[in-house]
Image (tube, rainbow, N blue to C red; front, side, top):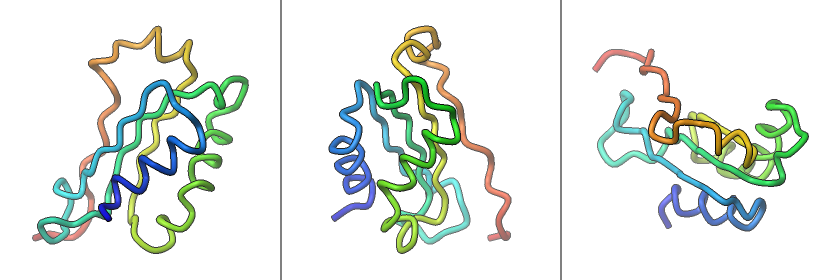
Length: 104
C-alpha cells in the first residue's frame, strides 16, 4: 500500500480533519525514482485548537510513529486550527526546504 495513502488514512481516523494534503516530496531529494521517503502534510483539525505548535506536531508524530520509524525519512508538518486556516491565503501554503543531502 502506498505510504501516502497510509498516512492519509491514519490522520483521517485520528483527527477527522477539515482539510488534509499528503504530498510525496521524495522526487525533490537525492533518492531513487519512485521513492516514498519524504512527505509534506498540511492538516487542519479541531483537535489542534488551544494546542501549541509543538504539541500538534507531537500528536501527528504519535499517530505516524510506525511509519516514521520504518518508512519515512523526512516529514514536513503544517498543522493549523480552523481559524488559522481561514485567515491564510490557501494558495500560498508553505513550501518545504530544498534538499541539503548528498550530490547525485
